[in-house]
Length: 218
Image (cartoon, rainbow, N blue to C red; front, top):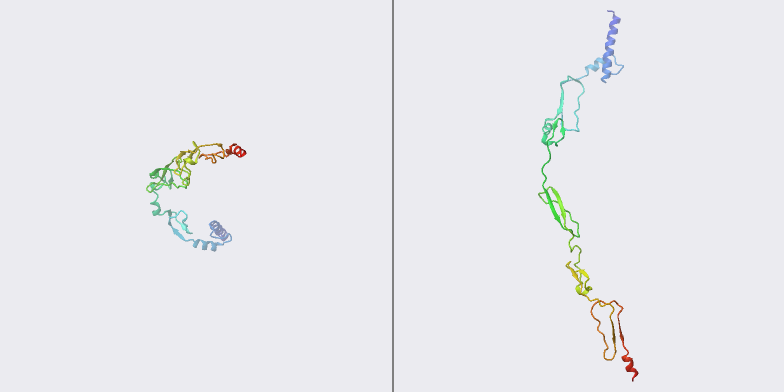
């Protein structure tokens, strides 16, 4: 074998080595044989690296260097112990573990409330998880605040209905006199007693002609 052919062979080996190192990001395309050897010597032998993941947001960083293929990365043992069927919702599978949790029994309460003029917040009592039903009673007869009512039966027209201060319905007893008309003679009768009750405002009380005749005879 000639010297030239040996040089050509070595150059071919250098080119193949350099191409591989460039592909791995360990050398420049202009690297000579010495640069390539330096780059190879700088690769650290990691052997079989073993790592673990304990947090889904914290990945495992693989160290640079040569790895022999026997290294492993797994979920941290403490986290693996949490991957139990009872900790996973039924119908969901996480990392090969099928869930069996279907929820706990819920203690529900039913309530009945009566409307008031104030806002009410209806919540479950202590010992209950939630409300299953709330029944709202009809509006009570005394729903309105009528405590200030001072009118009585005699203040309201007969047969007209009103609500008293207790909230009870009552019928009025005041007579409806409409338009009352009367006359007085001014001699023997000088006054007229107005009857109790409602008056329409069109009634009249007037003098008859007796006093005028008496004066004419003087």
